[in-house]
Image 1 (cartoon, helix red, strand yellow):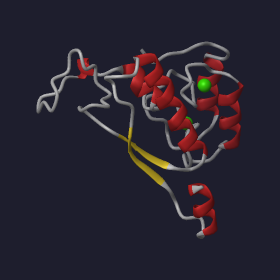
Image 2 (image 1 turned 90 degrees about the horizontal axis):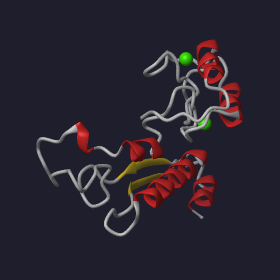
Image 3 (image 1 turned 90 degrees about the vertical axis):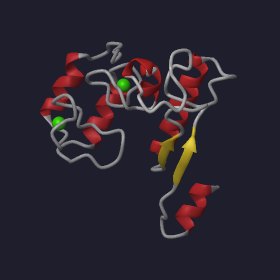
Length: 154
Ligand SMILES: [Ca+2]
Ligand SMILES: [Ca+2]
């Protein structure tokens, strides 16, 4: 419905702000899957997103160790699995951040071949940590290095 509206209104851009999953009622694995599915759906449809929140009820932090609303947060509080589901922490060569390097990553790379990063997921994954502004043989090498492997960033 919203995508139809955007298309009918000169391709207006959409953004989903402050979305997330309440940690108090949903198991971590289910939260991660929902977050991954939603983020991928947004990105596949060119929809911007902003995950909510940093240190509150839908946090990316481990509620068993974090201090809510702390002014001195610790990296040790972070659920790296959630950052991975958000596409913010991917294994080497895993362009679409689904923890596997396979044909889907190769298709994305070929679609963006010799182009700068434009639309996520970005094929410019090499050199680590943030790429070099173009999808080329360095990125192909990262995909080839882990071809058909399961990769996780943690
Ligand atoms: Ca992948
Ligand atoms: Ca690159």
